[in-house]
Length: 144
Image (cartoon, rainbow, N blue to C red; front, side):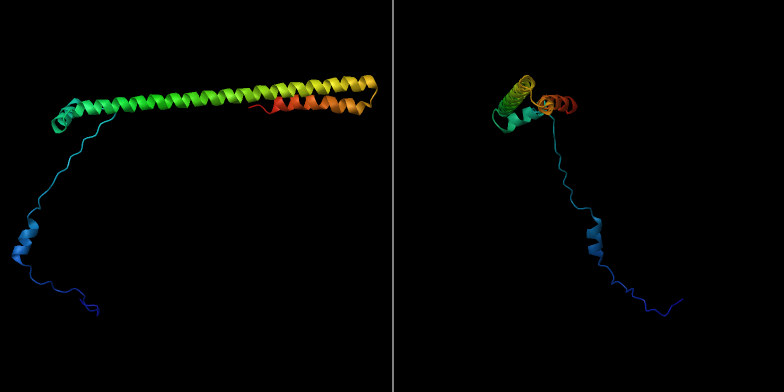
């Protein structure tokens, strides 16, 4: 049955028997293996092989692992010291802020007492007491 559309399939030339034979023979295969381990030291079998390749290879690997561990310990110690210093500085700043706040509040209350004794308008006393009162309310509402 033809549909009137010309066929685009072309006949292939006869294959060369030697070329076919060359394609059917499997090519040489190379297999690569890799070994990995977790931690700073390889397993004992690998250490023996390192010693066979490099003189004192296992000892050098042990030395490298010791240096790496020492570096980690020193880095962590520096980080902890830095965190402790930052926490102390933050505590000092907070303490200083508490002292300033207490001083300002005491001063405002003292000024209120003086204004009442001198007979100032009541609004002055309310304004002066409002400063420490609002600071205390804000500190209670906005907590970290």
